[in-house]
Amino acid sequence: MIRLLLLLFAGYGVVMSAIFARRGARPTAASPSDRGARAPIRKILIIGATGGTGRELVKQGLAQGYEVAAFVRDPAKLQTTHPQLQIVRGDVLDDAAVEAAVRGQDAVLSSLGHRRLFVPSRTQSEGTRNVIRAMETHGVRRFICETALGLGSSAGKLGLFATFFFLPVVLPIYFWDKSRQEKLVAESRLDWVLVRPGVLTNEAPRGTYCHGHDVGSYISTGRVSRADVADFMLRQLNEDTYLHAAPGIVW
Ligand SMILES: NC(=O)c1ccc[n+]([C@@H]2O[C@H](COP(=O)([O-])OP(=O)(O)OC[C@H]3O[C@@H](n4cnc5c(N)ncnc54)[C@H](OP(=O)(O)O)[C@@H]3O)[C@@H](O)[C@H]2O)c1
Image 1: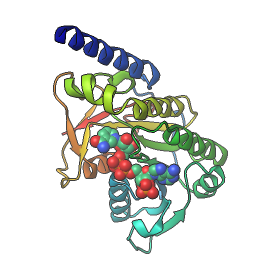
Image 2: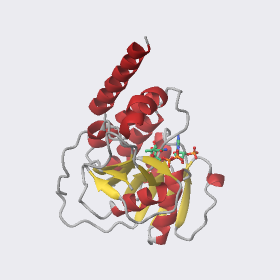
Image 3: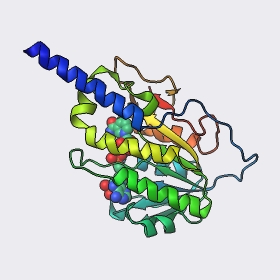
Image 4: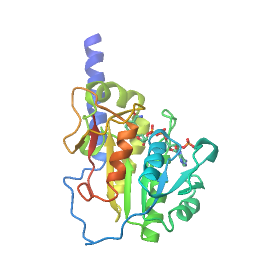
């Protein structure tokens, strides 16, 4: 009986992984930019700026000299002031607010997420749809979007525990929407990069990490700090190595 239950459970994990593989983005390789020389990126909009990765994006973006616009629902949560920082209040599901925030920017970075794991939600996909629409409308090309290992071409790469327990039992609803988010980004006409971290930690940045298409393991669960993910995301603003690709990132 227990063996049968284990077998059913394992089958469920495999089926869910196959679903996340099919629904997420499956880019095969980076495609070169078709635009030749592009204007330098100075002004960046950060979606999810009050979150763990978002705060790091704000902090590191300012330290690197960017003019940063932080898109937040509650400005009191950010608690950062800086002459180069503009706080834009809004909800990502409000397309007028998103459009106003995107207008005039050179690039957008998104670390959008939420903690309502067991409630059906389209926040990530519909919010990202609004961002993409605004960017296409205003000719803002570069979009760096944080998703997760375990989606699309990285299905199974978050390790055995995640593949057979965490994703199918705890995160199926969340990942369902996240895979939709990836697909929308990959189908857009933007200069996009999907950044897929392993499990996130709040540890200090190490400054060195593994990134690329082969990152992640089918056995063990890779981790990486939000600070290092932010560093990698900011690098994608001015590099084309992963243009139209979905690199994983772990320590
Ligand atoms: N946790 C992990 O181990 C892990 C692993 C791999 C990938 N990821 C992914 O990495 C990303 C970043 O994760 P994180 O833990 O650093 O972020 P987080 O702390 O969960 O922050 C999410 C951000 O999204 C914002 N947000 C949510 N709904 C919004 C809405 N309707 N309008 C505007 N903003 C909204 C939140 O704003 P409020 O502050 O107002 O709520 C917050 O700023 C997420 O996409 C997550 O799925 C996470």
